[in-house]
Length: 249
Image (tube, rainbow, N blue to C red):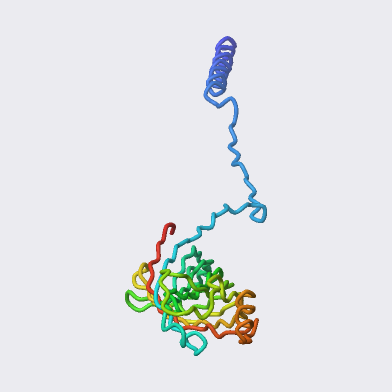
């Protein structure tokens, strides 16, 4: 009986030992813990990507007719040529255009002063023009414009032939009058489909012109006294047709 009890105890301990060993092999050796990385973003320190500003450029070239709006010039010349060219760039979402430019205004006619001569009144220009896209209707855009120019004007006579009919009134044929000054323009420009345009403006220009000293002496010898300097009203109304060349959008 005693032997049987001992055997039962040994058998129970054997079973418990094998069960404990089996559980030790099945249980995971280590417990893994997953930690999510924490990322802190400082929005204030983030740098915004730089966006390169896209400029828009165009070239305006126009030519047309200039009509003198005063007696100082219209008594001598009935009309002339007006032309300009310049590169312009856009501001305010392509509403305002600024156009540095160079231009020319040229009046001329044949004159018989004892010999056939050509009289010309030439003005070189350099300035800036402001064009504002007020509104668009269909294919047409309307631009009120303002312009300021520095002008260099010359009135001169040029011999065409050496044939003389009478004694010339004067022999000085170089630059008879010279002068310079600022001019101011205001008008409207109508652009069709962004390429062709018509421009109408009024130019206010009153330069002080200086008479050639040789002519003053020549006329004085003939008993005629003339002013050495005088302010002339060279204002005009200009009508031009031009083309707008966009080469970057």
